[in-house]
Image 1 (spheres, one colour):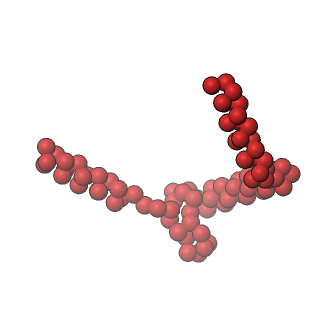
Image 2 (spheres, helix red, strand yellow; image 1 turned 120 degrees about the vertical axis):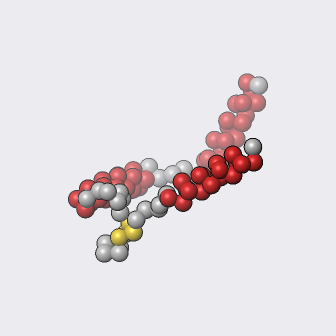
Image 3 (cartoon, helix red, strand yellow; image 1 turned 45 degrees about the vertical axis):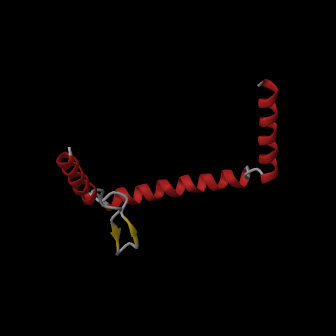
Length: 86
């Protein structure tokens, strides 16, 4: 039992040790999205991310998050409704 546990832990350490974080590209000053991807693919993914984040910013400006008091009132209301139906 102990021997099999040690073998399992050793294999786990080997597997986890081979995992790498995102590769940093010093020329571009940022990490590569996928190390196997070409520069064009990474640029395309960067443009997609920019469009997505711009859309999120527009939506947040149009519909700002609710103030804390409204969220608290909503939680209190849900608690009251839960108590009523319990």
